[in-house]
Amino acid sequence: MSAIDDLVTELARLPTIGRKSALRLTYHLLRQPAEQSHRLALALVTLADKVRPCTECFNLTESDRCTLCTDPRRDRSMVCVVEEASDIPSIERTGEFRGLYHVLGGRLAPLDGVGPSDLTVDQLVARVTSGAIREVIVATNPKLEGEATALYLQEQLRPTGVTVSRLARGLPVGGDLEYADGVTIVQALSARRAM
Amino acid sequence: MSAIDDLVTELARLPTIGRKSALRLTYHLLRQPAEQSHRLALALVTLADKVRPCTECFNLTESDRCTLCTDPRRDRSMVCVVEEASDIPSIERTGEFRGLYHVLGGRLAPLDGVGPSDLTVDQLVARVTSGAIREVIVATNPKLEGEATALYLQEQLRPTGVTVSRLARGLPVGGDLEYADGVTIVQALSARRAM
Image 1 (cartoon, rainbow over the protein chains, first blue to last red):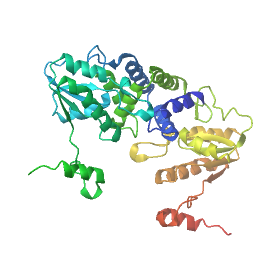
Image 2 (image 1 turned 90 degrees about the horizontal axis):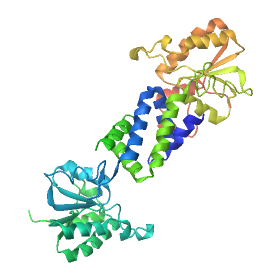
Image 3 (image 1 turned 180 degrees about the vertical axis):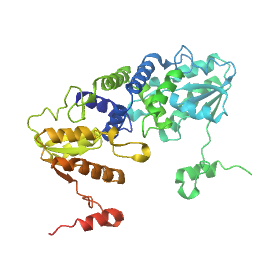
Image 4 (image 1 turned 45 degrees about the vertical axis):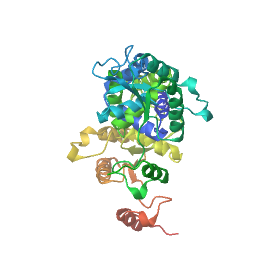
């Protein structure tokens, strides 16, 4: 039946949802009141039409500047650089960072054709050059491409004289030494701290 | 941000999708062209507004009667009774059953307040009484409530004189005796066949 097939096809386009899950979700929705599907549809359309990047930090927003950039209580002297807007909630949840953000829009990945001009590197340098920023905390992912991106940013920011720091690498809290990978253990050893 | 929160909330209402997956799906959609969200929204609304139960077998359809009931090549002397419309594709995929279906709309579950009047039992008896049906194959799930439902159907259909059969229980093909549960092994033993 085309309406069912259509929804299954569209749901299966989403990551982690295969055709079987898509079919299960579709039948689930058919057992719910039609309003539930309508609300989900409205939320999808609203998101697609209203959300855009913040003109200052490239976080997602429904206005010109995002709620973090317009919050007068944030510390405007610190900027945390993340790969994606979706990384911000993880840091915000900790409640430990009160500065601003800068969303790169990805990481340097020459093999995928992602170069510096595909990211918001120039905009970051401009923000640092023009403003009251004292420290840039690079929070790209602790993977090869994230590390390369961090080094590239450090180089680009050097002429501005701003302090550039990087999130510490080490054993995850609650993790198990037995199951930790070797690279993490090496990082944890070399970054060991006096007790 | 409200548009993101709204979509996360709506997605998280779906089974097997928690808030974390919902957030991941939302950010994924934000990285796609807006048309993808629009197509998904349209598919949801179309499904909710157009799909309804077949007047003959209660399978899902966009017309009065479903594509199976209106297919002249189907064997109208056999009816396979399933709990949900979502069970039909599993049987259809085998290509081994060429008869019609009857969707009960659930299974008897007194503890959940589901009694015979909540299912399409009367409509099944009426179909069998009025028509050319020679055999009813009960394909409710091989669980306690499915078994109870099968027994109830058998009783209700007895006055019509129709043949009532049940899907065989036994070891699943490709399964492992070592990991089979005891009840299945007991069923497989008592239903053993000469080689």
